Amino acid sequence: MKPFRCSVAAALGWLLAACGSAEVRTADHYDPGQTPRAQFLREAANCDKQAETDQKQLGYGPYDPSQSTYNRMFDACMRASGYAPKTK
Image 1: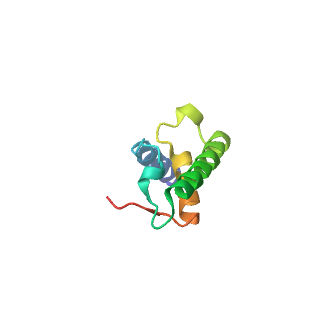
Image 2 (image 1 turned 90 degrees about the vertical axis):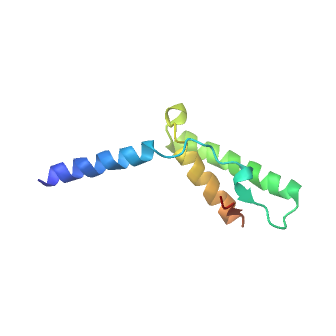
């Protein structure tokens, strides 16, 4: 019975990943706060480069419709830079 549970868990994981948002994160998804616009955009561009590099190394490239690797790295970089995601 154990192999069945593992395969069900793996299938569920793939299903949840496939249902994730295909929207690519951008600076528009974060609140710049009091940071000057030019600095905010510069830091977002740096996060974009970092996320693209990460996706090339760890993601599935054009075969990753959820952009999950890119989005995780972009989010981590923006949060590390002190920016919070905008609330919906």
